[in-house]
Image (cartoon, one colour):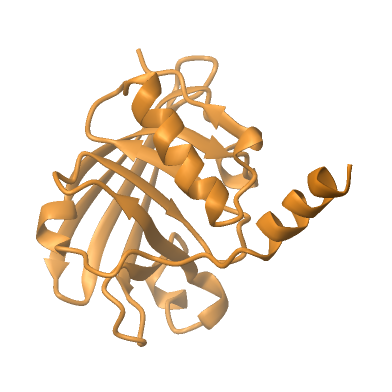
Length: 170
C-alpha cells in the first residue's frame, strides 16, 4: 500500500520539460487535436478541433484555433505566439487577447512543446503548471499504440493522463 501512495506523490513532483530542439518552420501548418485536459476556453468545442500555425517572422507566429460546437457552428480564435525571452526554442508563449493588450504579461500563456516525434507528426503541448495539455497530430486520428506511448512519457513528466479527453474528429 505504501508504494501506491508514493507513486502519485512522485508523479506530482516530476518536472515538466520542453524538448531541446524545435525547427519552427517544420512545426508550422495544421495540427489536429487528439486529446486535451479540459479547460474553460474550449468549453464550447464538441469536435473537429484543429490548430494552424503560420510563421509571420522569427518573433511572430499566427495561431488559428478552430473547433465545431455541438450545434454545428464553427468557432475560431485567432492569436499570436512568440518565443519566450529565455531563448529555449520549444518554449513559446501565446495570446488570444487583442494585440493592443500584448504589452500586458498576464495575457500571455505558456506554450511548451513537450514531446515531438522526429517526423513532426505527433506532438504534446502543455505548460509547466500541468494545468494545460494537448496531444496534437498532423492527421485526425493516431494509433492506440502511439497514443499510449506518448501518454506514458507525459505521465513521467507528472501529467494526470487519466484526465485526458479524446477529441472527436469527423
